[in-house]
Image (cartoon, rainbow, N blue to C red):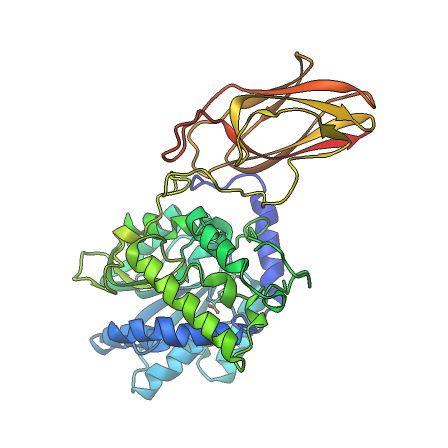
Amino acid sequence: MSGGRGPGYDQRLARERETFAGQEEIHGNLPPSAHRWSNRHVRPKLEALGVPGLDELIVGQIAERARGLSRDAVVLSLGSGNGDQELGWLRGLAAQGLDNVRLRLLELNPEMQARAEASAREQGVADRVELITADFNTWRADAEHDVVVGFQALHHVLDLEHLYGQITGSLTDGGVLVVHDMIGRNGHRRWPEAHEVVDRIWATLPPELRRNALTGQLDEQFVDVDCAADGFEGIRAQDVLPVLLDFLHPSLFLPYGNVIDPFVDRIYGHNFDMDNAAHVALIDKIGVLDDSLLDLGLVTGTRLTALFHPAPQPLRVHGNRTPERSVRDTRVVDPAGRVSFRPGGAGERLVRGAGIVTGRMNGIAHDDWAAPSVEFPVLTTARVDAVEFRTYLPDDAGEHGSVTVSVDGVPVAKADVGPGLTEQVLPVRLDAHRQVRLSFDADWSVTAGGDRRTLAYVLVGLGLLEG
Ligand SMILES: C[S@@+](CC[C@H](N)C(=O)[O-])C[C@H]1O[C@@H](n2cnc3c(N)ncnc32)[C@H](O)[C@@H]1O
């Protein structure tokens, strides 16, 4: 995705404001399994890097700078929400006798800013706190900052290049950007290599561990929700790290989490009862597996705690989890070289609705990848007025174009196929109870990963819509 703001931006912004307006407890409702995992698999790694906790890391960075200054140290917090954490930092600093600190809270949501303002007044520190109610995709830095904090905020940014530019330009020479954020695939989805592992674990889970808190259903398949579908949640999560590395230099770098994520999130994580020894053992084992996959370089971290600076610094990392090894190459569909990834979910029939496929589907492979030319016979069960054409291409597919749909060799419609999951309704009319040959001709082809086949797109589904 480009760094620009495009169509739909205002709707997404409105949705983002709506989502957070009523949220007084942003980090509430985290499942106990998340705490178990983080205490066993994250905290010790941070401690080994000399970081006792996140608040201590941030307060320590501010204190280090405030101590050496005769003026106020200026701290900017990005997407600061209700400001609770930030006010906690001020209290932590005051406890160390440091009160030469000024907080700037950059937040889109006026309701949250009002809550931050009320808390600052209640705590008698309103004169130390400046509210900047703005969109960080367009905000322009108007002061120098000694410390900038991106705490669960960068994965909401669309124009990372703009924001990183503003941060970099406003950091003092000795300044620091503290990052604690999500850096996995856009929309917080799994990349294929992780999806496959999660699917295999899923197949072993008893029903009570597969309950989806959003729908109340027991999910036969792991549902890989795209959180970026409407607001800004995870909108460019996969770019947060690589783009940042173009602007600033890390001194502390700890990426973690990936296949564990679905088991410690708010959708499935609450199924795990931390008083149940079997559930605890499972979380611990997946935690160990995840760490091994990360250390072997088979998956890349979905979360990051790190410090970044304007100039190169000596770097502290966990083992071989370096920045270079932590960037997922988004041009590769499946690093193992197979193209076996089914984004539409397994088990669905490819052709649904008012007709059945009555012969061989030429050009469709076992994994639903379509060759540039696809052809198959269909017997309609009712009159068809339109065809719903669902396709998928990897996010960064360089090649794509249009597909011509023909009925008995006569072109009747055209679809434009782009990256990601696309769904189009095409005006294709077919009489009821007729045998016809449908064909789909793409005007491009790709070879993906180590696959030697000539492919065009993944045919996720075809719906024959009744008139
Ligand atoms: C996941 S919350 C994190 C809040 C806080 N940093 C914390 O960890 O408690 C993300 C925050 O980013 C804010 N946000 C989202 N889009 C924004 C934008 N375009 N400009 C400024 N803030 C934004 C949201 O309103 C929300 O408060």
